[in-house]
Image (cartoon, rainbow, N blue to C red):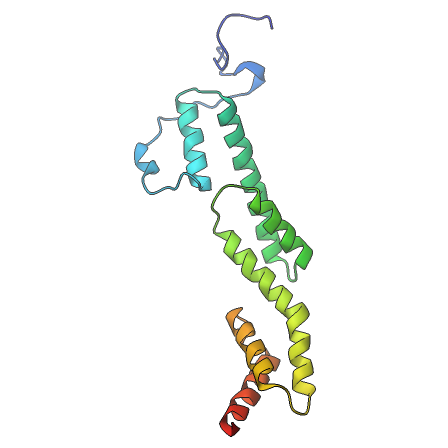
Length: 176
């Protein structure tokens, strides 16, 4: 309502868009930046937003892309904090994966968090099974080998109990 002319999205003399949103003047978009950037990556979203800004286009789609970029940055920050924490909770990691499933953007952190979650789960549930098998007089070779393989696949093969179990499994295989 009210106010001087100009259509939606036009800037006034102070560089403000309707609604008070301040827009910085930017250099024209270097098209070479678009080469090799997947549209479904954060970089691709950011390039689309730069192009939208260059064209001075304000649309619902551009607003949605801005929200998406903000969500991705917030998720990425939370994911990095969780991965840097000495022992993130399984619930926190699972929550980050759930949030990520609602973000339609490719992120390299996804694999890292999935591996971290799988390792955490192994340590919480499978490690006690391995320790119990090691305490048994005659543990199942199949069970011990399977647990060792799982641990190795998660990068946990150097845990003392895994090394001990692998040695026992190797010795048992020689007897078979």
